[in-house]
Length: 284
Length: 284
Image 1 (cartoon, one colour):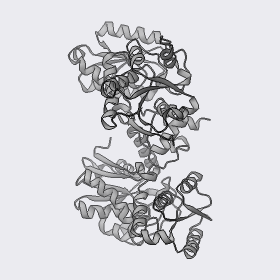
Image 2 (image 1 turned 135 degrees about the horizontal axis):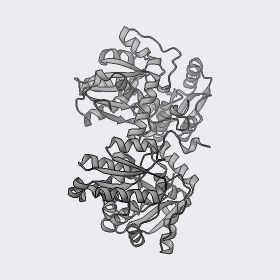
Image 3 (image 1 turned 45 degrees about the vertical axis):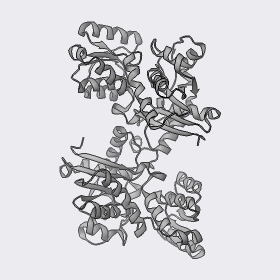
Image 4 (image 1 turned 90 degrees about the vertical axis):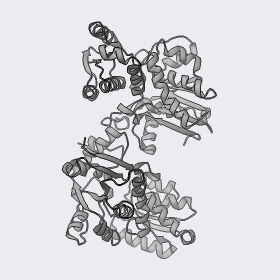
């Protein structure tokens, strides 16, 4: 269909449904002794919350998860099922950060940021490392980019294990702050992005951006229609459930075919936590 | 969730999206010389049509597929894409059979029945054989039953490779002709079955029924609500797309938990050709 050979790393099959379990596990395991005394804390409404609550629960570590009060009830239930302590806040970044700080002052818990944390980046890098063990030296490795945890980890894995591979970030056109930041070599924040790829709305971080600047080849964008079409093709042809944020990796190939024709590509499917009760192709 | 260990054989990932490719391939390969001269023919509106058209196309064999004129346009397109010659007929069994006979008289093509054919049964048996190579001697092996091609093949594979394993057929309660036939030891046809599991509406055949009588332990049924719930759980938890006819294997476990508690089970997911534009949990 695309004229190239694509090998997908299927993190939709990962524990808790997304690559986030890699970083969360590494972050907890790196600080296990302190974490067992004080706990870990984060603010997240998405996959990171579930991943952190789960690994903490399995490791005898208390977890404090600050979630906006309007979070998806399924995600709230999943965090609770994993044993996470949820502290609700107002749905603004300010309220999330203030609530998290007060939880940390009270408990002494270690803050585990969803992406701007070197333990998280190192953990996310293992997805690309495993892909390279199966598919050595692909021409390209593509990962979605939101806050940049997965993309910076992917780029570091390529730097050490497959330096000839070009690393490409895939981003929604409607949330193209990372592409702008990358091309202008200066940090540009994400402001009210309007994209179905809800995992990719965040801004780059102070740890992730420099790694991306140094080790990523380019960042390409895909339209909203392109994201939905790519998601549909993966559902129909591969028979796997992926979330919209994962579809960008195929989306950029479909919208920039001349760049990838005839090449061997590794592409990271970031997660499978799609809302199967509300699918984009049924909403017209 | 079920209190037992279930290992799924994921034929939704099979070529053309269903186990049907196994039987169709074996049937064509067993008669390749004649097939190359005369072609192969069948009537089917479903997965068998695609599977046969595909393997024929790859083997230099002409295929003649009789399809009801009201067939799903996606399935018609798939058969055409694989190079099948479609002959449309009226949507009745009589018209299907008459049209097929006239195609066979004209062309001399070999008829490949979707399930009541020993080459087809032997081909479908390879799914269970592969499962048993990975999971030796499970307590139970469960397969859906419609016409009985997959179930009879599964039962034969168990008979030869894992004789202690109990083989269970899974059937919609609303299309329980196979359970009735099995328990009364006399053939009872399927009459106007009303089930979402569209692959399981057919009656047993003259080759499949005796194998099932001799080598299957029991046939259990599941309600329509149970099929939809099992399908939803597999989509949500396993992140794979399966069709309703495949969900019966988990459905019978969920509706007969006492029968399976603590056991090791192999279960065959028959296919992934679900209509993602019209999902049962969005139709209420």
